Image (cartoon, rainbow, N blue to C red; front, side, top):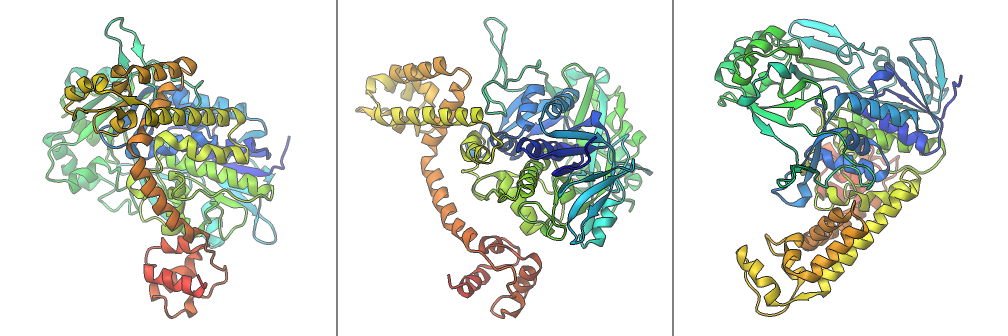
Length: 640
């Protein structure tokens, strides 16, 4: 039995799994401690991965060499690319997953990761060395494990308490006990602790639903109308061509609440822990409970709900949009007033959960604590919400803990490099006043952070540090070479009016009077590369040749080329802006800088800079309350 490791990961959720896999894959001995090895990467809330901006994070995890995208593709029962009606900067992949298989697949991944050990137990305390740094952990079974780096990914388990109406049950998740001791220990070390609240909806037996009264919602896959075969849309999360979606697809279903169901909820607000004083912690703004919806949007007589299947064959459905902490009988009574659910039978009611989190402004951009050297925090313990945000943090914590254990420089992603970089920078610089959820609007360089090119941005980084293997790197370089060749073909080839005018006229685009470059046609609104190929034979031959050479990557390469052609000007302009602002990231601030003595700084700037100790002028510029004039003062003081 081994008790000494380089890195210990506490918690087997989405953050913990990515952290443990990354750490071990980088060649350091790693131990993952979790209270139940049969619930690895449990999807505690909705059985889905991705969504607006979240899908971009999953593609970035995959590009770096993480596993969430691969696990999701292997267990997906529906896939959709959201926001296709808008520009590619906000296209966001989302998949429904088979909840049970998702856990099983993650367990298989961890079991087959060299250098990774697992232990089923609960960590009750951290062990510190004489300098106040981390040296190990103690568990409920009385075991002591040693490591110079510990990653805390406890999710909602720290002093967790669930609320089912007036019933309060200690726990980190339904049927799982809470974790005690770590919060109090870290508070004594100076870490600021607060409480947050989240919730989850009722789970419904699909056999009790009248689906004829719902609106089906299918994924992007289509059925061939000639032979009835399923044609899978080429989009997925993983960039690896050998990773495929293999499970049978299932539909989701849309339905709506109504005035009568709202009346039941409203009449029982005094029984809601959110409104009777039983819960006073911070809840999510962008994923509110149904009782919060009817109060906040009292003028609306209905709210949209989604019935989402929990697996390929199960009858269990997740009712997205009906999160609630009201008593079970109130939830059921309200649901029965929705026509499709008049005979509803539930597996379990929705509930709210309160838990501890730590102020993320006390972290470095590596996710290491400023106050406890060797301790890294990732996931909901940093005030975030969502599997994807947790996994992104876990990946970076695992990378930096492993590199720290070996005395190597950390990896920090910039805001113009990745949504993961935006996420961590927001947490460390701005902190949170509600559960943090990623949106495309949070990224000022979102045209540069598209889901289609995450591999181009990040696989070189993952390969350099040893997380993305040679095969992944070769796939990326092949794709980039073929993409650029296709763009160059479109830049140099010209089509005659006889080739393209019929097509242009059919879609209402101006016809041409002379030969025109293919690239100049593709930039037109409404003109796509595949559409143009049907009219212009040389382009069709080029694309067919690509499909024959690499059938698994061809459509992805074509889409990437078309996006770069259509948005070249916007991309270049945003890159120039990012480069200008990026210079501030290289202007270092001394760690002992005496901000309080600089009277030219505003009072708020002096206070916040003294407390948060930014490492660069770029970081200082993003602290709320630090104005552009304060930044100019800092640059003058640094003779820049």
